[in-house]
Structures are given as C-alpha cells and as structure tokens.
Amino acid sequence: MRQLIASIILVLLFSVGCAQVQKPSDNAALTQEPLDKATLNSLRLASSDNIQLQPGDTYQFGLIVVECCYVSKPVKAPASWSITPAGGAHIDAHTGLLTVDKDTPDGSVFTVTADVENGRRILSIKVYVYAPKANPLVGLWRERSQIKCRSNETLTPKIPIEELELRADGTFSVTWTPFERYQDYWGTYSYDVQKGEIKFVVDGGNYVPPNIKGSGSFSIDDKQNLVLKGVWLGSKNGEAKPDICSIVFSRH
Image (cartoon, rainbow, N blue to C red; front, side, top):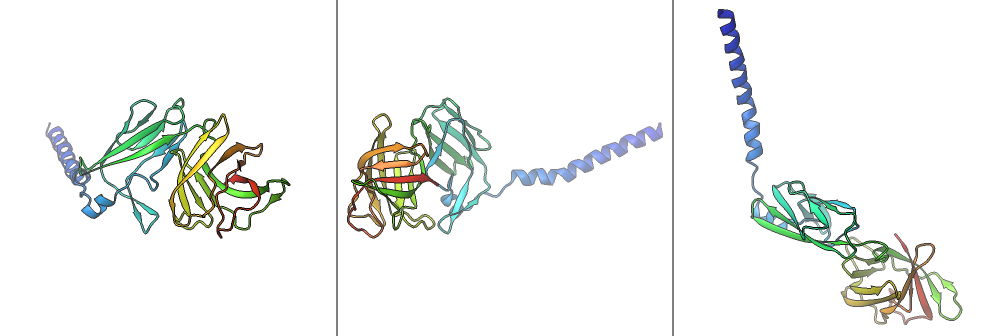
C-alpha cells in the first residue's frame, strides 16, 4: 500500500512539473508585442496595388512593409481576413489564403480586408478576376517588330518597348527601359473582343511621347503575338511617327 501511495505522489509531482514548464511558452504565445506605430502605418497587404487572378487561382495574402522602394518584408501580427462580396471567392479568416471559384465570371472584382491587431489598422485591397478567353490582353508584352503600311515590310525597332503591361483593372503602362518600378507613361485602355477594337488613353507619365495615336484595332495571331494596328505608342527618342501601320508584341 505504501508503495502504491508513493507511486501516485510521484505521478502527481511529475504532472505539476510539466504544467509549470509548459506554462511560460503558452503565455509567450499569448503576449506578442503590438506593432510600433511606424510599422503599423507602413503595412500593406501586397507589394502591388493590382492583384489580378484567374478563375480557380489561389493567392496567399499577408502583412508586409516595402523597404527601399520595392523590397517586401513580411510582418508578423495577428490579423482577421474577410472578403466582399461573399460569392465567387473566399478567404481563410486566419491565414489570409484566398481562393477564387472556378466558375467566377470574367470582370469580377473583390475587396479583401485585414483587421490588424483587433482594429488598430484596417487595410483593404482590390482583386480583379479575368478569363483569358474574355480578355486575352492581360499580361506583360515586349515589342518585337513593326510592319510598314504600304510594303508590309517587317522592321526591327531601334529601341523596342520592353514592357507594355495591360492589367485586368483596365490600366496600362509603357516602358522602354525598365528599372525597378520606373514606367515611362501610363493610363487606361478599353477594348471590344468581338470587333477587335482597342483604345489607349494616357493619364500621365515620366516621359510621354508627343505623337501617340491611341485608337486602332488588335488581334492575337497564330503565334499568340499581340498585333496592334493603327496604334502608335510613340518612340523613346520622340521622333515623328514613321510609315508604320502595325506593331507586334510577344509575351514576356
């Protein structure tokens, strides 16, 4: 009997000891230091303000700060995630993992919101859904060639447009020599897939050529190149528009 009582006492003492050892680590997890004001005010939900996804895609959101212009650094802080509207996509409230439904239609727009540290900061970002068949223009394109009007001769541009970026939210940018986040000029574009019509409207830029012609037609050829006809996006040296009727771009 004495041996049984002694064994019970040893078990109880061991259990209390384990509880005392585990308690500090549990408390440490519950007492995370709140973010300082500078970090809190610098928080972002993504390195880009333009999140574009296709039906069926997933995207992992998180809290970040952007250092020295373009370097993203993750930030650990409690956040609760939500999305509106409720149909067509959903997000894990704890992890920030977004999933777009496979049947979500082209042109759908969602707003993702993060409640950081129980209301200390509320952040939101737009998510644009596009389907390649409905909008074959979205993406990053590089100028490959120019086609003369009368002779149909194919020319190689002296200084090609390295980045023509067409986004799902209807914005675009043109850059001859990419460097970090530099863009030459930007604006909005509209298109009609059935008619093959396209129109570029410039809103601003660091360098805007004086002779841009934004209205014309577009097509996707058998090599999946983008062909702009009647459109002239300018040249890096600002020279007068040459006898060019079409510009051919390939995807990056």
